[in-house]
Length: 510
Image 1 (cartoon, rainbow, N blue to C red):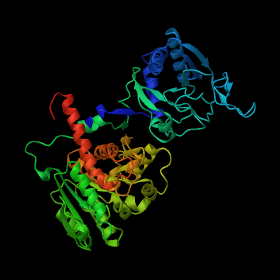
Image 2 (tube, rainbow, N blue to C red):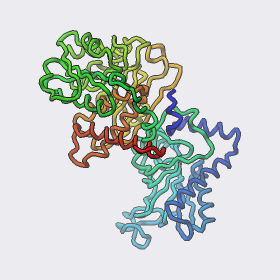
Image 3 (cartoon, one colour):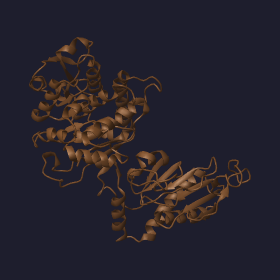
Image 4 (cartoon, rainbow, N blue to C red):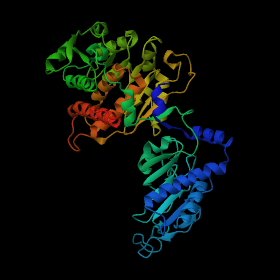
Protein backbone atom coordinates (compact mmCIF):
# COMPACT_ATOMS: atom_id res chain seq x y z
CA UNK A 1 0.00 0.00 0.00
CA UNK A 2 1.35 3.43 -0.93
CA UNK A 3 2.47 5.60 1.99
CA UNK A 4 0.39 8.49 0.64
CA UNK A 5 -2.71 6.70 1.92
CA UNK A 6 -1.85 7.76 5.45
CA UNK A 7 -2.75 11.31 4.44
CA UNK A 8 -5.91 10.59 2.46
CA UNK A 9 -9.49 10.58 3.68
CA UNK A 10 -10.75 7.00 4.06
CA UNK A 11 -14.06 5.91 2.55
CA UNK A 12 -15.65 2.89 4.25
CA UNK A 13 -18.54 0.71 3.18
CA UNK A 14 -21.61 0.02 5.29
CA UNK A 15 -20.21 -3.41 6.20
CA UNK A 16 -16.81 -1.98 7.09
CA UNK A 17 -18.40 0.70 9.29
CA UNK A 18 -20.53 -1.90 11.04
CA UNK A 19 -17.37 -3.87 11.81
CA UNK A 20 -15.64 -0.75 13.11
CA UNK A 21 -18.59 0.07 15.35
CA UNK A 22 -18.57 -3.45 16.76
CA UNK A 23 -14.84 -3.28 17.44
CA UNK A 24 -15.18 0.10 19.17
CA UNK A 25 -17.98 -1.19 21.40
CA UNK A 26 -15.62 -3.78 22.86
CA UNK A 27 -13.70 -1.02 24.62
CA UNK A 28 -16.08 1.97 24.66
CA UNK A 29 -19.72 2.08 25.69
CA UNK A 30 -22.32 2.79 23.06
CA UNK A 31 -23.54 5.78 25.05
CA UNK A 32 -20.07 7.33 24.77
CA UNK A 33 -20.03 6.99 20.96
CA UNK A 34 -23.56 8.32 20.67
CA UNK A 35 -22.70 11.30 22.88
CA UNK A 36 -19.70 12.15 20.70
CA UNK A 37 -21.72 11.84 17.50
CA UNK A 38 -24.63 13.86 18.86
CA UNK A 39 -22.23 16.55 20.07
CA UNK A 40 -20.75 16.82 16.57
CA UNK A 41 -24.24 17.19 15.11
CA UNK A 42 -25.13 19.88 17.64
CA UNK A 43 -21.96 21.80 16.84
CA UNK A 44 -22.71 21.67 13.12
CA UNK A 45 -26.26 22.86 13.80
CA UNK A 46 -25.02 25.81 15.86
CA UNK A 47 -22.67 26.78 13.06
CA UNK A 48 -25.52 26.69 10.53
CA UNK A 49 -27.82 28.69 12.84
CA UNK A 50 -25.09 31.14 13.91
CA UNK A 51 -26.05 30.47 17.52
CA UNK A 52 -28.74 28.59 19.38
CA UNK A 53 -30.79 30.91 21.58
CA UNK A 54 -34.35 31.27 20.35
CA UNK A 55 -33.76 29.24 17.21
CA UNK A 56 -36.42 26.72 16.22
CA UNK A 57 -34.99 23.28 15.49
CA UNK A 58 -36.91 20.23 14.31
CA UNK A 59 -35.14 16.89 14.84
CA UNK A 60 -36.56 13.96 12.86
CA UNK A 61 -35.20 11.03 14.90
CA UNK A 62 -35.77 7.36 14.11
CA UNK A 63 -35.27 4.33 16.29
CA UNK A 64 -31.69 3.44 15.27
CA UNK A 65 -28.27 4.90 16.02
CA UNK A 66 -28.93 7.91 13.80
CA UNK A 67 -32.01 8.71 15.82
CA UNK A 68 -30.02 8.40 19.03
CA UNK A 69 -27.43 10.84 17.66
CA UNK A 70 -30.24 13.24 16.77
CA UNK A 71 -31.78 13.05 20.23
CA UNK A 72 -28.42 13.84 21.86
CA UNK A 73 -28.07 16.84 19.53
CA UNK A 74 -31.61 17.94 20.50
CA UNK A 75 -30.75 17.86 24.19
CA UNK A 76 -27.54 19.85 23.69
CA UNK A 77 -29.23 22.43 21.46
CA UNK A 78 -31.99 22.90 24.04
CA UNK A 79 -29.31 23.65 26.63
CA UNK A 80 -28.09 26.43 24.33
CA UNK A 81 -31.53 28.01 24.31
CA UNK A 82 -32.91 26.53 21.10
CA UNK A 83 -36.60 25.65 20.84
CA UNK A 84 -36.32 21.99 19.88
CA UNK A 85 -39.01 19.57 18.79
CA UNK A 86 -38.21 15.87 18.23
CA UNK A 87 -40.44 13.97 15.82
CA UNK A 88 -40.62 10.28 14.96
CA UNK A 89 -40.45 9.88 11.16
CA UNK A 90 -43.04 7.10 11.31
CA UNK A 91 -45.82 9.28 12.68
CA UNK A 92 -44.69 12.78 13.48
CA UNK A 93 -46.58 16.02 13.55
CA UNK A 94 -47.35 17.28 10.03
CA UNK A 95 -48.57 20.59 8.68
CA UNK A 96 -50.51 21.16 5.47
CA UNK A 97 -48.79 23.60 3.17
CA UNK A 98 -50.57 26.93 3.20
CA UNK A 99 -49.74 30.54 3.99
CA UNK A 100 -50.60 30.20 7.66
CA UNK A 101 -48.12 27.36 8.15
CA UNK A 102 -45.38 29.26 6.35
CA UNK A 103 -45.35 26.82 3.45
CA UNK A 104 -46.40 27.23 -0.13
CA UNK A 105 -50.05 27.87 -0.90
CA UNK A 106 -51.99 24.62 -0.86
CA UNK A 107 -54.33 23.30 -3.49
CA UNK A 108 -57.14 22.68 -1.06
CA UNK A 109 -57.48 20.21 1.75
CA UNK A 110 -56.82 17.15 -0.40
CA UNK A 111 -54.23 18.56 -2.78
CA UNK A 112 -52.07 20.42 -0.27
CA UNK A 113 -48.60 18.99 0.25
CA UNK A 114 -47.58 17.86 3.72
CA UNK A 115 -44.67 19.65 5.38
CA UNK A 116 -42.78 19.32 8.62
CA UNK A 117 -43.57 22.17 11.04
CA UNK A 118 -41.82 25.45 10.32
CA UNK A 119 -38.36 25.69 11.87
CA UNK A 120 -35.05 27.46 11.37
CA UNK A 121 -33.31 24.12 10.84
CA UNK A 122 -34.35 20.50 10.26
CA UNK A 123 -31.97 17.80 11.51
CA UNK A 124 -32.47 14.61 9.49
CA UNK A 125 -31.67 11.73 11.85
CA UNK A 126 -34.43 9.44 10.64
CA UNK A 127 -32.43 6.58 9.13
CA UNK A 128 -28.77 5.72 8.61
CA UNK A 129 -26.58 4.07 5.98
CA UNK A 130 -28.11 0.63 6.48
CA UNK A 131 -31.68 1.72 5.68
CA UNK A 132 -33.61 -0.59 3.38
CA UNK A 133 -36.93 0.28 1.82
CA UNK A 134 -38.37 3.54 0.54
CA UNK A 135 -38.41 6.86 2.38
CA UNK A 136 -40.88 9.54 1.28
CA UNK A 137 -40.84 12.17 4.02
CA UNK A 138 -42.99 15.29 4.05
CA UNK A 139 -41.33 18.32 2.54
CA UNK A 140 -39.47 21.08 4.32
CA UNK A 141 -40.87 24.61 4.21
CA UNK A 142 -39.09 26.75 1.61
CA UNK A 143 -35.85 28.31 2.82
CA UNK A 144 -35.37 25.94 5.76
CA UNK A 145 -31.96 24.18 5.62
CA UNK A 146 -31.51 20.50 6.40
CA UNK A 147 -28.61 18.97 8.33
CA UNK A 148 -28.24 15.22 7.69
CA UNK A 149 -26.73 12.84 10.23
CA UNK A 150 -24.20 10.50 8.53
CA UNK A 151 -26.17 10.37 5.26
CA UNK A 152 -29.50 11.79 4.03
CA UNK A 153 -32.20 9.36 5.15
CA UNK A 154 -33.32 7.09 2.32
CA UNK A 155 -29.95 7.15 0.52
CA UNK A 156 -28.23 3.78 0.26
CA UNK A 157 -24.90 3.93 2.08
CA UNK A 158 -22.82 2.13 -0.55
CA UNK A 159 -24.34 2.96 -3.93
CA UNK A 160 -25.74 6.41 -3.14
CA UNK A 161 -29.04 5.48 -4.75
CA UNK A 162 -32.08 7.26 -3.32
CA UNK A 163 -35.01 5.05 -2.40
CA UNK A 164 -38.01 7.38 -2.52
CA UNK A 165 -37.65 11.14 -2.19
CA UNK A 166 -35.10 11.93 0.57
CA UNK A 167 -34.65 15.48 1.83
CA UNK A 168 -31.78 17.36 0.22
CA UNK A 169 -29.30 18.40 2.91
CA UNK A 170 -27.35 21.61 2.91
CA UNK A 171 -24.77 19.88 5.11
CA UNK A 172 -24.05 16.30 6.20
CA UNK A 173 -22.07 15.23 9.25
CA UNK A 174 -20.45 11.85 8.52
CA UNK A 175 -19.22 9.87 11.51
CA UNK A 176 -15.60 8.60 11.52
CA UNK A 177 -15.21 8.35 7.73
CA UNK A 178 -16.82 9.09 4.41
CA UNK A 179 -19.34 6.58 3.08
CA UNK A 180 -19.42 5.65 -0.63
CA UNK A 181 -23.04 6.76 -0.92
CA UNK A 182 -22.04 10.34 -0.10
CA UNK A 183 -19.76 10.48 -3.14
CA UNK A 184 -21.80 9.00 -5.96
CA UNK A 185 -25.17 8.92 -7.64
CA UNK A 186 -28.08 10.59 -5.78
CA UNK A 187 -26.14 10.76 -2.53
CA UNK A 188 -23.61 13.21 -3.92
CA UNK A 189 -26.40 15.56 -5.00
CA UNK A 190 -28.42 15.24 -1.78
CA UNK A 191 -25.61 15.44 0.80
CA UNK A 192 -24.55 19.06 0.34
CA UNK A 193 -21.27 19.94 2.08
CA UNK A 194 -19.94 16.84 3.83
CA UNK A 195 -17.97 17.10 7.06
CA UNK A 196 -16.22 14.06 8.55
CA UNK A 197 -16.08 14.16 12.35
CA UNK A 198 -13.87 12.19 14.72
CA UNK A 199 -15.85 10.16 17.25
CA UNK A 200 -12.94 8.02 18.40
CA UNK A 201 -13.08 5.36 15.66
CA UNK A 202 -10.06 5.04 13.36
CA UNK A 203 -11.21 3.87 9.93
CA UNK A 204 -7.80 3.85 8.27
CA UNK A 205 -6.97 0.32 9.33
CA UNK A 206 -9.85 -1.24 7.40
CA UNK A 207 -10.37 1.24 4.55
CA UNK A 208 -9.57 0.10 1.02
CA UNK A 209 -11.08 3.19 -0.64
CA UNK A 210 -9.71 6.73 -0.43
CA UNK A 211 -10.83 10.17 -1.55
CA UNK A 212 -8.33 12.22 -3.56
CA UNK A 213 -7.89 15.87 -2.54
CA UNK A 214 -5.62 18.73 -3.63
CA UNK A 215 -3.11 18.05 -0.86
CA UNK A 216 -2.62 14.47 -2.05
CA UNK A 217 -1.38 15.76 -5.40
CA UNK A 218 1.14 18.10 -3.77
CA UNK A 219 2.44 15.38 -1.44
CA UNK A 220 2.72 12.71 -4.13
CA UNK A 221 4.39 14.62 -6.96
CA UNK A 222 8.07 15.04 -6.23
CA UNK A 223 9.81 18.14 -7.50
CA UNK A 224 12.47 17.44 -10.10
CA UNK A 225 16.01 17.20 -8.76
CA UNK A 226 18.54 19.90 -9.59
CA UNK A 227 20.44 17.52 -11.86
CA UNK A 228 17.35 15.98 -13.50
CA UNK A 229 17.46 15.21 -17.20
CA UNK A 230 14.66 14.83 -19.72
CA UNK A 231 14.80 11.04 -20.06
CA UNK A 232 14.10 10.49 -16.36
CA UNK A 233 10.45 11.41 -16.99
CA UNK A 234 10.07 10.41 -20.63
CA UNK A 235 6.69 9.32 -22.00
CA UNK A 236 5.99 7.50 -25.24
CA UNK A 237 2.58 7.91 -26.89
CA UNK A 238 1.27 5.66 -29.63
CA UNK A 239 -1.67 7.20 -31.42
CA UNK A 240 -2.98 9.20 -34.32
CA UNK A 241 -4.32 8.06 -37.66
CA UNK A 242 -5.55 9.89 -40.76
CA UNK A 243 -8.20 12.33 -39.54
CA UNK A 244 -7.45 11.63 -35.86
CA UNK A 245 -3.96 13.04 -35.39
CA UNK A 246 -5.30 15.68 -32.99
CA UNK A 247 -6.08 13.07 -30.34
CA UNK A 248 -2.45 11.96 -30.17
CA UNK A 249 -1.33 15.58 -30.06
CA UNK A 250 -3.67 16.29 -27.12
CA UNK A 251 -2.23 13.35 -25.20
CA UNK A 252 1.30 14.56 -25.95
CA UNK A 253 0.54 18.08 -24.76
CA UNK A 254 -1.17 16.74 -21.64
CA UNK A 255 1.95 14.73 -20.79
CA UNK A 256 4.28 17.66 -21.45
CA UNK A 257 2.28 20.09 -19.32
CA UNK A 258 2.04 17.54 -16.49
CA UNK A 259 5.81 17.27 -16.17
CA UNK A 260 7.07 14.79 -18.76
CA UNK A 261 10.62 15.81 -19.67
CA UNK A 262 10.46 14.13 -23.06
CA UNK A 263 7.49 13.02 -25.12
CA UNK A 264 8.01 10.68 -28.05
CA UNK A 265 4.92 10.70 -30.23
CA UNK A 266 4.76 7.54 -32.32
CA UNK A 267 2.29 7.96 -35.17
CA UNK A 268 1.37 5.83 -38.20
CA UNK A 269 3.18 7.34 -41.16
CA UNK A 270 0.00 8.40 -42.95
CA UNK A 271 -0.90 10.80 -40.12
CA UNK A 272 2.44 12.52 -39.54
CA UNK A 273 1.86 15.30 -42.04
CA UNK A 274 -1.27 16.37 -40.13
CA UNK A 275 0.72 17.19 -37.00
CA UNK A 276 1.80 20.80 -36.44
CA UNK A 277 5.30 21.50 -35.11
CA UNK A 278 5.53 20.98 -31.36
CA UNK A 279 7.74 19.97 -28.45
CA UNK A 280 7.11 16.23 -28.91
CA UNK A 281 9.61 14.18 -30.90
CA UNK A 282 7.55 12.55 -33.68
CA UNK A 283 8.43 9.19 -35.18
CA UNK A 284 6.57 7.33 -37.91
CA UNK A 285 5.30 3.79 -37.52
CA UNK A 286 5.01 1.24 -40.33
CA UNK A 287 1.66 -0.13 -41.38
CA UNK A 288 2.57 -3.64 -40.21
CA UNK A 289 4.56 -4.87 -37.21
CA UNK A 290 3.63 -1.78 -35.23
CA UNK A 291 4.55 -3.11 -31.80
CA UNK A 292 8.11 -4.00 -32.83
CA UNK A 293 8.74 -0.44 -33.96
CA UNK A 294 7.12 0.92 -30.80
CA UNK A 295 9.45 -1.15 -28.63
CA UNK A 296 12.47 0.22 -30.46
CA UNK A 297 11.36 3.87 -30.43
CA UNK A 298 10.27 3.91 -26.75
CA UNK A 299 13.21 2.01 -25.26
CA UNK A 300 14.37 4.90 -23.07
CA UNK A 301 10.90 5.97 -21.93
CA UNK A 302 9.39 5.26 -18.50
CA UNK A 303 5.80 4.62 -19.62
CA UNK A 304 3.80 4.09 -22.79
CA UNK A 305 0.35 5.54 -23.57
CA UNK A 306 -1.44 3.69 -26.38
CA UNK A 307 -4.67 4.43 -28.18
CA UNK A 308 -5.60 8.12 -28.62
CA UNK A 309 -6.76 8.47 -32.23
CA UNK A 310 -4.95 5.26 -33.27
CA UNK A 311 -7.87 3.98 -35.30
CA UNK A 312 -9.48 0.56 -35.43
CA UNK A 313 -7.69 -1.11 -38.31
CA UNK A 314 -6.51 -4.69 -37.96
CA UNK A 315 -2.93 -3.39 -37.83
CA UNK A 316 -3.81 -1.11 -34.91
CA UNK A 317 -5.58 -3.95 -33.06
CA UNK A 318 -2.64 -6.32 -33.58
CA UNK A 319 -0.20 -3.60 -32.57
CA UNK A 320 -1.91 -2.83 -29.27
CA UNK A 321 -2.20 -6.50 -28.42
CA UNK A 322 1.47 -7.00 -29.19
CA UNK A 323 2.36 -4.05 -26.96
CA UNK A 324 0.37 -5.49 -24.06
CA UNK A 325 1.98 -8.89 -24.40
CA UNK A 326 5.59 -7.84 -24.90
CA UNK A 327 6.46 -4.43 -23.46
CA UNK A 328 8.05 -4.42 -20.01
CA UNK A 329 6.97 -0.96 -18.90
CA UNK A 330 3.81 0.54 -17.37
CA UNK A 331 1.09 0.95 -19.98
CA UNK A 332 -1.86 3.34 -20.21
CA UNK A 333 -4.50 2.08 -22.66
CA UNK A 334 -7.12 4.59 -23.79
CA UNK A 335 -9.70 5.17 -26.53
CA UNK A 336 -8.94 3.04 -29.62
CA UNK A 337 -6.48 1.06 -27.51
CA UNK A 338 -9.42 -0.15 -25.42
CA UNK A 339 -11.26 -1.16 -28.58
CA UNK A 340 -8.23 -3.22 -29.62
CA UNK A 341 -8.46 -5.32 -26.45
CA UNK A 342 -11.80 -6.75 -27.55
CA UNK A 343 -15.01 -7.53 -25.71
CA UNK A 344 -15.36 -9.05 -22.24
CA UNK A 345 -13.59 -12.42 -22.11
CA UNK A 346 -11.38 -11.54 -25.08
CA UNK A 347 -10.09 -8.40 -23.33
CA UNK A 348 -9.35 -10.47 -20.20
CA UNK A 349 -7.46 -13.03 -22.31
CA UNK A 350 -5.37 -10.33 -24.00
CA UNK A 351 -4.49 -8.62 -20.73
CA UNK A 352 -3.66 -11.91 -18.97
CA UNK A 353 -1.27 -12.78 -21.79
CA UNK A 354 1.00 -10.16 -20.27
CA UNK A 355 3.66 -11.77 -18.05
CA UNK A 356 2.80 -11.46 -14.36
CA UNK A 357 6.14 -9.84 -13.49
CA UNK A 358 5.59 -6.97 -15.96
CA UNK A 359 4.50 -3.53 -14.65
CA UNK A 360 0.73 -2.95 -14.52
CA UNK A 361 -1.64 -1.77 -17.23
CA UNK A 362 -3.97 1.21 -16.64
CA UNK A 363 -7.25 1.21 -18.57
CA UNK A 364 -9.30 4.43 -18.86
CA UNK A 365 -12.84 3.55 -20.00
CA UNK A 366 -15.89 5.77 -19.96
CA UNK A 367 -19.20 4.03 -19.27
CA UNK A 368 -19.72 2.89 -22.86
CA UNK A 369 -16.24 1.39 -23.09
CA UNK A 370 -16.63 -0.19 -19.65
CA UNK A 371 -19.88 -1.81 -20.79
CA UNK A 372 -18.07 -3.36 -23.74
CA UNK A 373 -15.18 -4.59 -21.60
CA UNK A 374 -17.40 -6.01 -18.86
CA UNK A 375 -20.35 -7.20 -20.92
CA UNK A 376 -22.72 -5.11 -18.81
CA UNK A 377 -23.24 -1.46 -17.86
CA UNK A 378 -21.45 -0.16 -14.74
CA UNK A 379 -24.71 0.50 -12.88
CA UNK A 380 -25.23 2.94 -10.04
CA UNK A 381 -22.48 1.74 -7.68
CA UNK A 382 -19.44 2.96 -9.58
CA UNK A 383 -17.02 1.87 -6.87
CA UNK A 384 -18.23 -1.69 -7.11
CA UNK A 385 -18.28 -1.59 -10.92
CA UNK A 386 -14.69 -0.37 -11.19
CA UNK A 387 -13.45 -2.94 -8.67
CA UNK A 388 -15.29 -5.74 -10.45
CA UNK A 389 -13.88 -4.77 -13.85
CA UNK A 390 -10.34 -4.50 -12.45
CA UNK A 391 -10.69 -7.99 -10.98
CA UNK A 392 -12.11 -9.45 -14.20
CA UNK A 393 -9.37 -7.98 -16.39
CA UNK A 394 -6.40 -8.11 -14.03
CA UNK A 395 -5.64 -4.45 -14.71
CA UNK A 396 -6.00 -1.05 -13.06
CA UNK A 397 -9.28 0.54 -14.17
CA UNK A 398 -10.05 4.26 -14.21
CA UNK A 399 -13.82 4.49 -14.70
CA UNK A 400 -14.51 8.02 -15.95
CA UNK A 401 -17.53 10.01 -14.86
CA UNK A 402 -18.78 12.83 -12.66
CA UNK A 403 -17.53 10.58 -9.87
CA UNK A 404 -14.41 8.89 -11.23
CA UNK A 405 -13.19 5.70 -9.60
CA UNK A 406 -9.77 4.09 -9.93
CA UNK A 407 -9.59 0.45 -8.87
CA UNK A 408 -6.65 -1.93 -8.78
CA UNK A 409 -7.21 -5.69 -8.97
CA UNK A 410 -6.86 -7.80 -5.83
CA UNK A 411 -3.38 -9.19 -5.24
CA UNK A 412 -2.77 -12.23 -7.41
CA UNK A 413 -5.48 -11.43 -9.94
CA UNK A 414 -3.05 -9.84 -12.42
CA UNK A 415 -1.48 -13.25 -13.08
CA UNK A 416 -4.70 -15.22 -13.00
CA UNK A 417 -3.92 -16.88 -9.68
CA UNK A 418 -7.48 -16.80 -8.42
CA UNK A 419 -9.64 -14.37 -6.45
CA UNK A 420 -6.68 -12.63 -4.86
CA UNK A 421 -5.34 -12.47 -1.34
CA UNK A 422 -6.03 -8.79 -0.71
CA UNK A 423 -9.01 -6.57 -1.54
CA UNK A 424 -8.92 -4.17 -4.45
CA UNK A 425 -7.57 -0.72 -3.67
CA UNK A 426 -9.82 2.09 -4.87
CA UNK A 427 -9.54 5.85 -5.20
CA UNK A 428 -12.50 8.21 -5.61
CA UNK A 429 -12.25 11.49 -7.52
CA UNK A 430 -15.03 14.06 -7.27
CA UNK A 431 -13.38 17.04 -9.00
CA UNK A 432 -15.08 16.29 -12.33
CA UNK A 433 -16.70 19.15 -14.17
CA UNK A 434 -19.29 19.41 -16.99
CA UNK A 435 -16.64 21.46 -18.77
CA UNK A 436 -14.82 18.18 -19.46
CA UNK A 437 -17.73 16.99 -21.62
CA UNK A 438 -15.89 18.00 -24.76
CA UNK A 439 -14.17 15.97 -27.46
CA UNK A 440 -10.55 15.17 -26.65
CA UNK A 441 -10.55 15.76 -22.90
CA UNK A 442 -9.92 12.06 -22.29
CA UNK A 443 -6.86 12.18 -24.54
CA UNK A 444 -5.39 14.91 -22.37
CA UNK A 445 -6.11 12.81 -19.27
CA UNK A 446 -4.24 9.80 -20.66
CA UNK A 447 -1.19 11.99 -21.25
CA UNK A 448 -1.33 13.37 -17.71
CA UNK A 449 -1.54 9.83 -16.29
CA UNK A 450 1.53 8.89 -18.32
CA UNK A 451 3.47 11.89 -17.04
CA UNK A 452 2.63 11.15 -13.41
CA UNK A 453 3.73 7.52 -13.78
CA UNK A 454 6.95 8.77 -15.37
CA UNK A 455 7.41 10.93 -12.28
CA UNK A 456 7.55 7.73 -10.19
CA UNK A 457 4.00 7.81 -8.81
CA UNK A 458 2.57 4.25 -8.48
CA UNK A 459 0.27 3.66 -11.49
CA UNK A 460 -3.09 3.38 -9.67
CA UNK A 461 -2.37 6.48 -7.61
CA UNK A 462 -1.02 8.28 -10.69
CA UNK A 463 -4.30 7.63 -12.49
CA UNK A 464 -6.32 8.94 -9.56
CA UNK A 465 -4.19 12.05 -9.11
CA UNK A 466 -4.34 12.74 -12.83
CA UNK A 467 -8.13 12.51 -12.83
CA UNK A 468 -8.29 14.92 -9.89
CA UNK A 469 -5.93 17.41 -11.55
CA UNK A 470 -7.85 17.05 -14.82
CA UNK A 471 -11.07 18.13 -13.10
CA UNK A 472 -9.45 20.91 -11.08
CA UNK A 473 -7.74 22.27 -14.18
CA UNK A 474 -11.06 22.37 -16.03
CA UNK A 475 -12.47 24.55 -13.25
CA UNK A 476 -9.94 27.21 -14.29
CA UNK A 477 -11.21 27.26 -17.87
CA UNK A 478 -14.03 29.04 -19.61
CA UNK A 479 -17.46 28.32 -18.17
CA UNK A 480 -18.75 28.15 -21.75
CA UNK A 481 -16.85 27.07 -24.81
CA UNK A 482 -13.79 25.47 -23.22
CA UNK A 483 -12.12 23.07 -25.65
CA UNK A 484 -9.68 20.28 -24.99
CA UNK A 485 -6.74 22.17 -26.45
CA UNK A 486 -7.21 24.61 -23.53
CA UNK A 487 -6.72 21.83 -20.98
CA UNK A 488 -2.95 21.14 -21.10
CA UNK A 489 -2.11 24.75 -20.22
CA UNK A 490 -4.75 24.71 -17.48
CA UNK A 491 -3.20 21.52 -16.06
CA UNK A 492 0.17 23.26 -15.93
CA UNK A 493 -1.37 26.36 -14.34
CA UNK A 494 -3.18 24.36 -11.64
CA UNK A 495 -0.14 22.24 -10.81
CA UNK A 496 2.07 25.33 -10.62
CA UNK A 497 -0.38 27.13 -8.31
CA UNK A 498 -0.81 24.07 -6.09
CA UNK A 499 2.94 23.60 -5.79
CA UNK A 500 3.53 27.26 -5.02
CA UNK A 501 0.78 27.19 -2.41
CA UNK A 502 2.48 24.27 -0.67
CA UNK A 503 5.85 26.02 -0.71
CA UNK A 504 4.42 29.27 0.61
CA UNK A 505 2.62 27.36 3.34
CA UNK A 506 6.02 26.03 4.43
CA UNK A 507 7.48 29.55 4.42
CA UNK A 508 9.38 29.13 1.13
CA UNK A 509 9.11 31.73 -1.62
CA UNK A 510 7.85 30.35 -4.91
